[in-house]
Length: 49
Image (tube, rainbow, N blue to C red; front, side):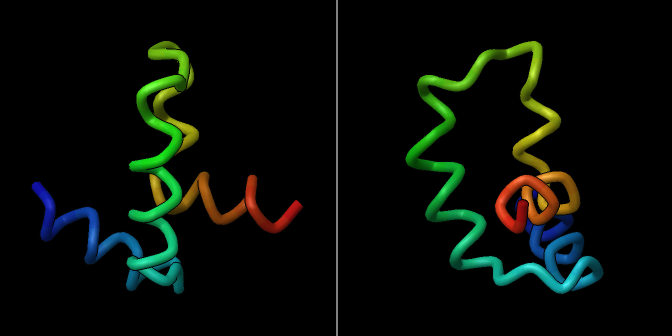
């Protein structure tokens, strides 16, 4: 599963270290019904805006 997330980061040109560091800091307080926003492809859009 972890490898597939890293492959997704590569596909969407997301730095895996930055992504993982950010989501690990935010996931505990993140709402479960919005968990898809932490996926690499959605995270990149949210961080860049």
